[in-house]
Length: 133
Image 1 (tube, helix red, strand yellow):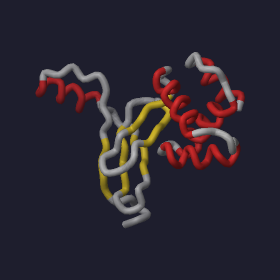
Image 2: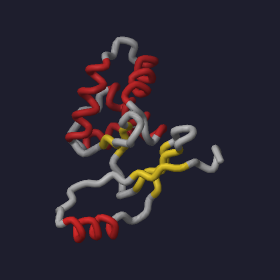
Image 3: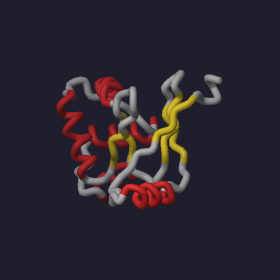
C-alpha cells in the first residue's frame, strides 16, 4: 500500500483510499473495465458512486498514471502506463495479455508511409489463447 500511495503522489494525486484501491486492482488484474472495477470497489466502499469512479479514473488518466485501452468488439479497459507494448486478446475467453515487444519500427514505418506524426498507438492482436486452443 505504501508503494501505491507513493506512486499516486509521484503523479500529483492525493492518495485517497479509493485511488489506492483502484491502483491496487490495476496492479492485480492488469486490465479492468469500468463495470468490473465498480463492482469490486463496492465490496470495500459500499457508498462509492459510479461517478466517483469515473472522476478518479479521468484524473489518473490526465496525470499520466493510467491509460484507457480501446479494444475492438469489447468494452474499454484501463491499465497502468508502462513500457510500450501490444495487447493480445483471446476471442474465446476474452483474456487480455500484454506482450512487451518493440513497437518503434511499426510506428516509424506507419509515419513514413502516411506522413502522420504519430502521438500514441494501441496495437491489438486477436486470436485464441493457449488455454482455449
